[in-house]
Length: 152
Image 1 (tube, rainbow, N blue to C red):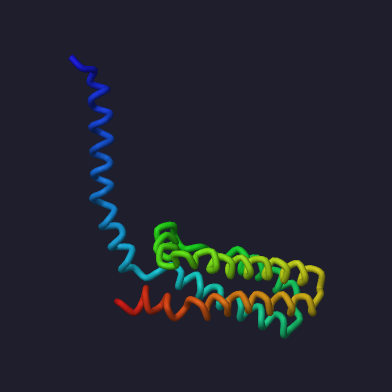
Image 2: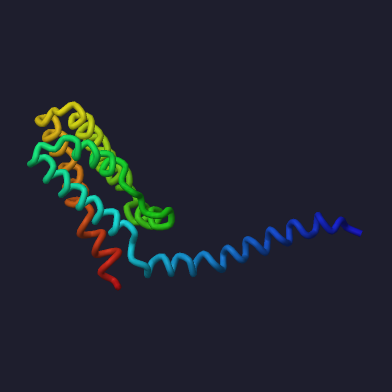
């Protein structure tokens, strides 16, 4: 007689795999119909960028230093959503990530400059943050919205 543990382990693995295959399409379909978390991330970034603009106009470097890490290290969408976005981007994923890296680095520099009370460096770094945002939006926003939002 065969060892029941040896028989049960492969059967259990097969059942788990089949269950995963059955659930995955439903999870993907559900994910495709939910509003994208990236929209919330972008809204928060917009609020933080507006707050930086206000703080710069008041020369409130402490506030800029507080906001800069929020921009540099902004929230990310959930893994499944990221995978959908990266799949849609295809070969452009590196360029897309490059814009995010530019925003991160410039926002970090902006926070450092604000910490030193260097208004000119804050403004120069903020301009670089905005360039990163604009570059991404110019390259991807319309096509992204058309692909992920207009079909609903």
